[in-house]
Image 1 (cartoon, one colour):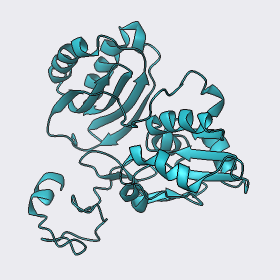
Image 2 (cartoon, one colour):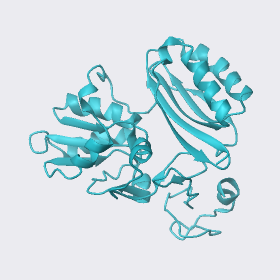
Image 3 (cartoon, rainbow, N blue to C red):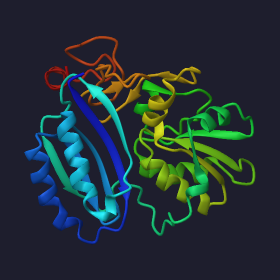
Length: 271
């Protein structure tokens, strides 16, 4: 594969995040990277793609700031850069939760690695929760996982209030694509009184470490770029998906058979 796709996030106090934007954008374009980077006062969230040298130089540039020195990354190969350009946006949150006063200072005991995750999937006392959006879950998920059928992550607290009780379901193991949504969800669930486990590094890290040898994952993993999905070897699948209703499609159509909307522009962008 000719290019590297890097996904990373890092929660850290960034009171100067607005000032970082322009220099980060300039550096990314100099390195000929494509992708999307979000900056907020709470940190950074990014998926970027480029040459091996370009990605490594971006890491070096970021980690020259002590605040990013221990930032963890996840990588996958790609035969073309799955973005049209590089964008750097300023946001209130690097993942939109709309949850106030989250305490993320005590989450170390919630992290589990890939081997521990496989063991949790076999524990009948643990509820396995997929914290991703419904259309992502429909493309692929871990066995036994509960799909809350949410359209966006900020709906998860309301679903939790209606469907889960820490007295009846005390243990919850959760996962998402790269781990960032679980960071906030874990903090919220701990505050509600649940015993929480989160797959450290998310699905992408799990694929990297296990290649899904135990076949606990079924389907592809949706990614938020032009690859659409990746398999357990982290290779792009270029799955067809409707940009309006997010239904996975078996083949290319002029109009989606589910919502009937025209898809011509979608295929020009993504295939």
